[in-house]
Image (cartoon, rainbow over all chains, first blue to last red; front, top):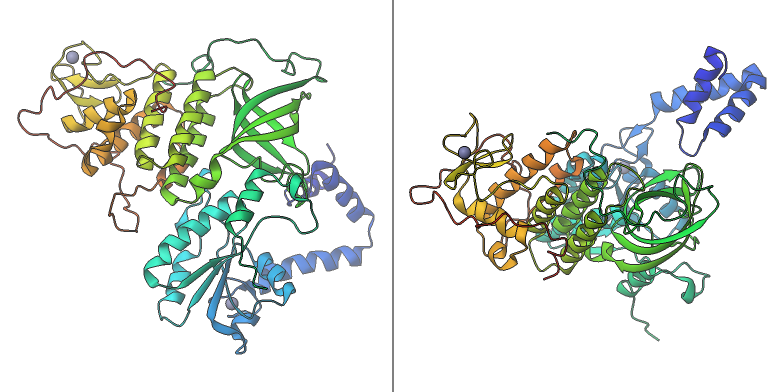
Length: 199
Length: 313
Ligand SMILES: [Zn+2]
Ligand SMILES: [Zn+2]
């Protein structure tokens, strides 16, 4: 335990994801020893991100304006929407340069045990976007874990009456690994997501 | 009546205490089979896995590196998985060293939304009912495995399976509701259901505010408690809804806090609309009068004995 303000900082840092008590202490003492100008810049960046960054009113992605960069881009295919859990997933998919459609960020996954149900995610907003019939394909790119699968199941059922093409990102074997080391669940999912080899 | 300080209640028959428990020196390995109840992130790449095991009871173990793509654990330690595992006893948390899948129930459960929500409520309830760690709870474990298997097989409506699980979990813990005779005096002509009294009550013992469910609803509860699936599957939607409301209210009254995932449980009728039916839980005394002649119903003669193998049909 340290003097009030120092302990305060350690406690706050310790709340950040992936920061344990040891790391929180290390960061706190690093900041104590750092140049005041550097610390000011960090504090400013923290405040600025909360003031200036908001969420796109169309897709829920982080945005500097009313709508995000992708939603404003007329070259992006408006017929395909890729549904993801978090804005960081948009970044990950954008890095692949494979996808030219639009996104919809749910803000998480359905997890009843954590009290998160469908109403707590941006699912209603998604249904509004699908209402005008312009979208023809929905790609469900929620995480390949239990909550992500459940969320995909829920969405697939929900949009079924709309008659869209609904696809799920293939998940399964990590590239570069040996088949014999794959666990049964992963191997099972890879079987489900198998594709036709057209040679 | 409430379950506070109820550690002893769900303790199964006392087996040999496996090595690696809190009384061990903290360096031994032990092996058990268990169902993953929940997982929590820990640090950068680890998770704390909470399992209900066959011999050891509830165990919390660290799975190191499980969140990395190339983890040797892969997806074996996701909720609903029934696994065979080896743990290394630690001072505060044990460390999971090896895992083999026995039954990956998660895949079949997650492929159907009502099944997923019912299954989640099962896991949460099993977690809440086994209060102490490393206190053997064999019957609760068998119930959970049986319930998940039944859910995964998809032969019965998910909510019915959940209600059967709730009723039998209460029975295992010594809180089976009285369904055949008045919970207070034992009289046979019992029609009202009073949670505070512990089940059905007769006219003389009936406290104010007791619900008056349909006789078919009570019969359904008896069928679920006994594992009489033929009768349960033949029940009507309105009686199922009423049964779920009573069972949920009864369960939550016996727990200190509500079951969080319960309000997200969906039920799907054959040919029901896709959308959820909010307010499906008649918590607050929504009572049906079953009409003349329904009194006495057909509640079974003997108090059903809790049988953890009820799901094995
Ligand atoms: Zn946008
Ligand atoms: Zn009585």
